[in-house]
Image 1 (tube, rainbow, N blue to C red):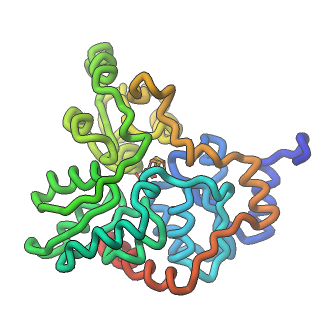
Image 2 (cartoon, protein in one colour):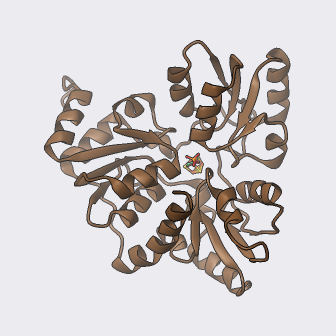
Length: 310
Ligand code: 13P
Ligand code: SF4
């Protein structure tokens, strides 16, 4: 890339020329969030992908999110700036092992958290995100037996909220499992009036101390509406950009991870850069390609989720 190129200007020009839309997750670098047409959580992004009239969707997020966009809009070209932008949670649930696990519970309905491969979604009855998992479980009859995967922390949280006995797959996200209880306690002692907010992918003992638990968009909304002026935030730190933008006078502190980790960045989300975004729009590559069969089988459980959360 020519170092004199104004990447933001070029991306905006290419976007118009190709009738493309940029969808970005809250965990993206601030500069990517700032040029996106839509920024959101996993549910909001899939709703946008389903309804856009653009010809090209550039997904500034991770692989499973771009796959979900492709499944919902199969006739559109879906681009991901870096195909290696995966997800540790998705990786923790290989579809062939999950298929065996599912065989042990033939009378159970399968709910999968959207952070999984298209192949896993194709093995599911309903998909959910962190913002509608409780609602989706509650929409089912009380005696319905349910398998929930791949995130056991979100699964435990949903069990607690709904009082249902879910069979859980033992998967987790590398970013949400690193928070240090000891360091959070010390930080809260330093800021006694701060609210502690956490994503439900965090471990149970971290969630137990939270003043608010919710998806990235739920957490953002909470920081806007709550009168506190300091928030300690237990999730990937990309979301702090939008929190700070929405409430410039408030203070946001990333919850401290254990001493094995320097920060709360998701290494997968952070693989996307402005340069890669420009290149993928220019070359229309890398593109998400899925088989017709996977698209058809994965579409039903995602659409069922969108209907329930409409
Ligand atoms: P939400 O965007 O649904 O809050 O999920 C967070 C996440 O981990 C996405 O990878
Ligand atoms: Fe996956 Fe965790 Fe990164 Fe989200 S934050 S994309 S769940 S590894």
